[in-house]
Image: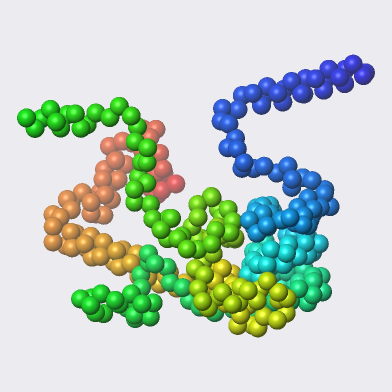
Length: 174
Length: 175
């Protein structure tokens, strides 16, 4: 019985290998890399927390870590958020901390998730925000659009040229 | 002796080093703005992107407005006022998330263009049909087509294809 099982297993493995070798296209490197997404949650979190907690970290590396965290299909755990905010404090980049809180909103996705998950994360890291003096985007008034920035390549209303300072040429008066 | 010189010009034995790079203004646009990260692809350009939310360079150059606030940023952030915090954000980034996601209203311009093109095409087709094309031949009229079917019922009776297969000759009606 055991040998039969082994034979079947070998057959299955051989079949899978055969299928694998037939692939006519090579996977594009870097895309579809989900090794870290399959890690257990605490290992994934600790990976980022350890990186962000390094005392010699600089601004470039903080942004690198946050960009990589942003790449995964993951809403960061409050512990990771706390480590990231402290890292922003260590490299003296206030804007990056606010930007990171907005990135959590992006990862939450739909408005319903933002209301629940983002609010939960902010509530969890509230003491750290207080301690470091970081305002959430909502406290800064960035929950609603503050300015309107038109697309340069798109159609413009005539008065926008004047508003945005593009009426300098004396021959073209709109 | 114009021809040989022209021919000489066309022959390149080495590949050009910078293909299409002569008109790349990226470094000029980024001049004076602090390089702070990698961005989406390593170019030092400013881009607001949902998938790469941290651009490579700051949005604005350092000037006399932001310099004292940057000095203040080194100390405790609780001492920063709300305006200073907003300035710090705006010197680093162009748009907030809510501004990035706000509807632009350009759908109105786009649909106006599409609908006007469709309308003009319709007018043009009507113009062709009314003024240009000749009358359709009489075989397109319904009377002619009905007569054609009746003729087929008589002439093709008993065949296994066509109109007669759908006609009940005994009760004189369609099956």
